[in-house]
Picture (cartoon, rainbow, N blue to C red):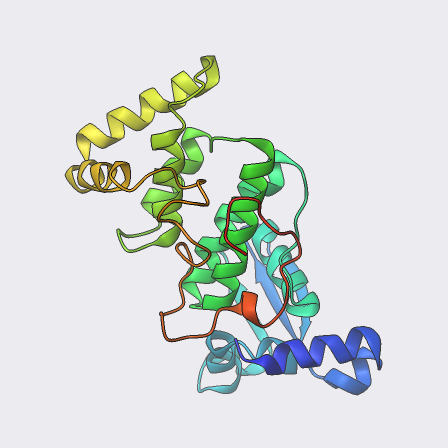
Length: 238
């Protein structure tokens, strides 16, 4: 994501009206099996290359509409909010935290790396605050929709490995399902030992620094250096 989107949204919020800043052209997204409608300014959403290619390229979306039957209205709502505000929404509810996992997978699908990095930071901060272990169904969803290179998969794997500490009835059931998954998947089994050798994913002084779970390359400038995060993390080196 370029700085253009952030500049547009900032002007819209603080110095001018949405109409004069973003124009009159809008597009409609029809999301999920319910075809929930989201209306978004075209200039704004086209700052995301994935959507720009769809709405300005030679595709059927040139008519200003896009059908997204496989996506979740909850996730797209978070995406639209991010488009206009430039930051990932953070709510202190379990349902919201679960939605962030789906949001990350959506951001990965549209290859919006800065958004992916913001989401993983929000997930990490909220888990640090509430000491949560993702439910088994979230674990399964992440592993079914990511590959071995995914930073989200690496994060969830680390949580489960070090979630063995302080087991209770809920955590014991979750870990048991995690153990069975590891037995069936050789690559997952290998990844587990790799993570164990490195240390706790929430340990700030360990090998996991500020950008460990980010998707940007080592040569790319991290968004955290461009602007302060909405909520700083005690564990990440920020």
